[in-house]
Length: 256
Image (cartoon, rainbow, N blue to C red):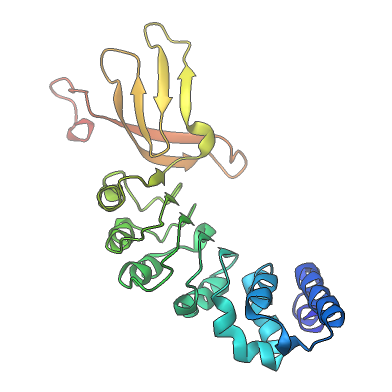
């Protein structure tokens, strides 16, 4: 493990080094060879590696390469760090029957959601799915995901997935009534007291719905959410869609 990852990427070999030493020490202590270790133990140890280093480790040892599909069954948490990871991950979907927590970061796409949405055998234990900033995820992908009733699916995070919409989450709400659908950063959730006269508190929920303490233009949803700039990533600009606002005569159609 150490040799292969150091040759490929010396700056990112720490994880593989720890895993390699763990396997070596365990084998010495147990007085057995690598192929004699229980599959669940090997799977859990290799699960601490980033996906690309995990693949390299299996390639470095013939016995691990032969066992790679069975070892994938013990993966429960994965974070993707590149488009290459995404391809490797999708190619291993059928073996990931114990996947619980999947963070695709900004590499999520409709093809992936379509695959797991159309095949109930893929990742049946998946509980938490995060695809923050995945610009290739659209409402179609959410629709595909809603077609597969994962009994364990508890939450999905599509914050900054700009090709999705509030209405696009409706099929997911229907399929999973108790699912937590997140469309904004956590720090935006909650109630905020405003300095404006007769405006009261503004309350935002994780899916982007809001309620303001005033007589009109008081409820609706966040329809667009963007980072202000790369220099100020913690500053957010948004657009709101009110559901209790009647525009005056002569206003443009987009205000309705």
